[in-house]
Image (cartoon, rainbow, N blue to C red; front, top):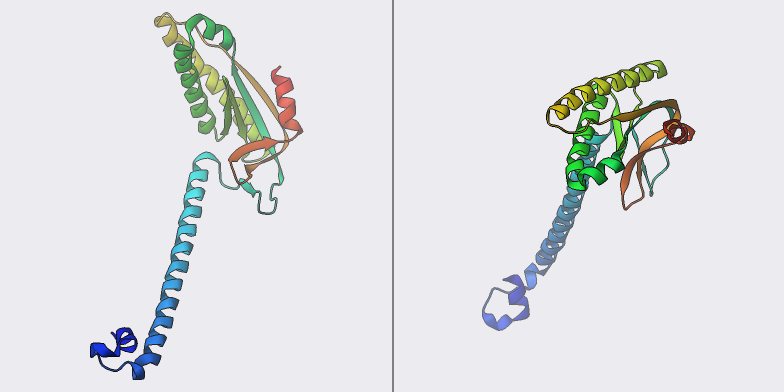
Length: 214
């Protein structure tokens, strides 16, 4: 109303002249309130996004794992780990004989079995590569890591024995795994290049694991 009175005196509104300063003060104050609300909204959105990332990350990696971003300082520190590689023996031959669709169900069953055993012994499944599983044990002292990894392999062996007994009753071929263990200093963390974040292990011990498996 004050603005209309100032722009169009013929409307018969009360004279706006004495209230122009108050109107301008109100507009300035309103602009500060709006700008502050937008800043608060952006801040809350950023906080919620970071909390969501933290909660999502916690589902896949244990506490204490470093996150290295492309726009931040590198925080990875060397740490000792016991590495475990699992591989289904003769997987390509099984695929040719039984078909990809059917063998895929077997692969998922082996992955679930391995994941349960690894996490049950305090380990962490790093990634799945084809019919292979890469896991690591990073908590505790080196001797404890090795003991947990070896116990995990024995657990997987027992679980596979039970699975194969069920498979035999269903006239399905037994599945065999190759398990390889190695230990040493590695860099463990989540590498984020701004496009994709990936949990990974780097270092000579990781390279040697592939030779051990071969």
